[in-house]
Image (cartoon, rainbow, N blue to C red):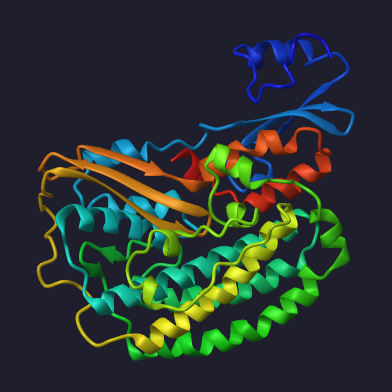
Length: 390
């Protein structure tokens, strides 16, 4: 190894994009691009690998291809106008981002949410969490060469989208939450659809286990691959299934309780093996826990309003102040920090996307591993690139 690369550094030197491609990296190594249109990145992500044979010497994720300036848009739009943006930050768990924005503004303005609306939020957000995990499961296994699982995953996911379409009017980029509640109530037909779906998905989970989880080919691809310790998670700020896959029982719904989650009985799945298989197991267990939450919330759903009678109007001006509000998304801790100067627009908006922190550790995790394992490691992180770029 020549002086071109410092093995102890996680960052490439400043003239990487010129000198690396001119010189081909360190002596005996090769530069390889993965993306920015690689199917396994599931978005416009570019990763530059430096390889010594089949082993990764260095990996550098390159962002910026999908930057849409959401935070700047939040400062130029009214409080209400910014809500649809939330469904475009993480389109797979859009309702969690809806909740983060609504919760931040409600905390800022001391807006009380009706109890029925809180349960509707829980039910719809957990259904959305399951749909996100199902898409991850199918796409992850497809990246690893298994085609059948994604067909089952999308079959079950379509049933969730049919349910969510009734109250929200959308199937992907939801803009359902309002300051002080939600946009529509859950009618009897929707509740019946949910009651039918819960036992259906529970009956499918053993098949998922037989088809994929207990498959020895999959286990050999994931076990012992992509070791992410709790120490590494703390250094990079990784949250969600990545942190819980390192044995840390941290979930915003329990650690920083919000809404009616403290009234519901559910556990936080963890796995202390710290590898890609551990992160896989955590997400599969989370699907079961979300079903438990939905079932309880549906039984406890009270009568009443789904939107506060004093909910703000579209040109409403928020009071002066600043607030931070966090929720648990499918990929980890979602945070919204907002500053108000008392006008119709926010003065400052800052979004904490869990995927950015989770992707940041990829370079360190993959160093010294086989290139073939990079796809397995990246898939175990469950990346949504628009969330990372924002």
